[in-house]
Amino acid sequence: MPGVIVTGGAKGIGLGIASAFAESGYDVAIIDRDHDEGREAVRKLEAAGVKVACVPADLAVPDEVEGAIGESVAFLGEVGARRDAQR
Image (cartoon, rainbow, N blue to C red; front, side):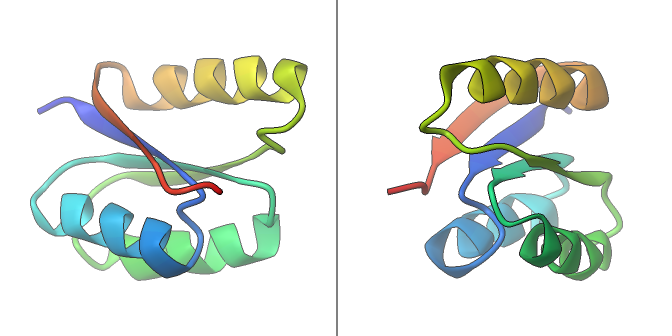
């Protein structure tokens, strides 16, 4: 099953989206600028038995976005969806 990238996935609506995918069996890569909250989200999502990573990045900085997407794809292997919860 392909993985999913969720931006802004460390809390709020983004975490809800990431949780729904994880509970459906998808591996998840969260891209969020708050690495501490991202690590907490990873712990919560791993309870679903899937692979989860948090990649820190500020989506307002183009170079960080490019690096975060590359790191997320490398972690997931195949990406089947991307959902943006970032404002």
